[in-house]
Amino acid sequence: MNTEQTNHQYQLKSRPTGMVGPEHFDYVEAPVPAPADGEILVRNLYISLDPAMRGWLNDAKSYVPPVGIGEVMRAMSVARVVTSRHPKFAEGDIVSGIFGVQDYAVSDGKGVVKVDPGLAPLPRYLGTLGMPGMTAYFGLLDIGKPQPGQTVVVSGATGAVGQVVGQIARIKGCRVVGIAGGPEKCRHATEVLGYDACIDYKHEDVKAALRRHCPDGIDVYFDNVGGEILDAVLTRLAMHARIVICGAISQYNSSDVQGPKNYLSLLVHRASMTGMVVFDYVSRYGDAARDLAEWMADGKLQSREDVVEGLENFPSALLKLFSGDNFGKLVLKVAE
Image (cartoon, rainbow, N blue to C red; front, side, top):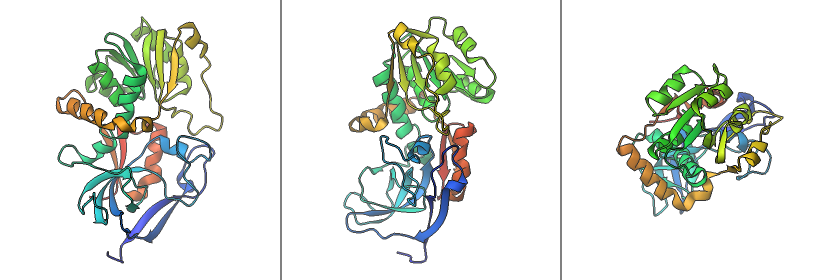
């Protein structure tokens, strides 16, 4: 071990009550840790930036414990094994796991998987071939249960999860309508991702556009944003519609979260609204990975990553998620 190496980390300094910002983190230096028996030391290469990170900062009950004050910010990463004292990993292996927003991390190997850099660019293992892809796969197919010819609407249509949801729905023979912010994203949705239509919520009346593009109602809605867009969709449900609640990025930085006003539409249309967390499907990740990789190899599934360089840019890069400035899966590159 090179004792001169330094580990740069982002630690949680304080809990935000509204919009998260640089003031809520400390950028610190620490010694590079040494792995014990049964552990590995990894060097982060790419770090995943996800809307869920905002929820992890709240001191509230959730599907995972909150990040503690003074703890390294939680994050999924793709990393290189630098030193291994674990029988399943060798120096030089490329792996994916929860390694945090830092240069180096020590792990006991739980939840760590090897990835093949020869099969896909490494950022893709944090997007379409990673947790966002798994989320899209299980959320749409297990909860949304789309049938050929049905209408599927996806908010956050060009984001990390949404871009995969829309394409899987198309693969399954559905009519797919996206909702995204700005003409460039909508153009990408229709021309590259294969959406039948895309609504620009920044420049269109979403309710009117949904009436136009979904004349027979919406059979499946995959929700990544919540708020006013969810309320607009609730006015266009088909009978027995299924709504998948994956995220609500419009509400994550709000101190007064707004729930749906039009929820009685669920009663009228005998519809369902179900929350999903991808960790419930761990035992089936292999099935999803196989299908996603096969669709990608066949050219049926496209992927776009938005890569920001430099660990020091973590706070500003994270804010791109909430301003809508990211285009595709947002990833922080920290090393070669």
